[in-house]
Length: 80
Image 1: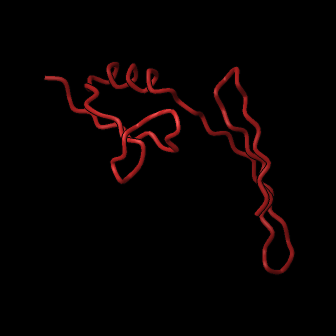
Image 2: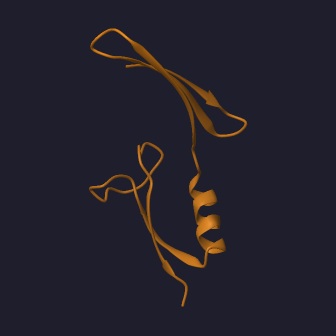
């Protein structure tokens, strides 16, 4: 599998062109776009959905979320 990834700063999106080489040598081509949301954007969407932010973790081990975190796991609850 070969990926060419570019970052669209203006729209906060990863654009990925992927080539998958099968064992018999045939190739499949895929293109997809991943949207990267900021923490404030997530908080705003939660509020709009009637949820209240509680905590954010940086990984599945519940590490502190920060600038170097590779993941953003958000815990939220329905607003009272």
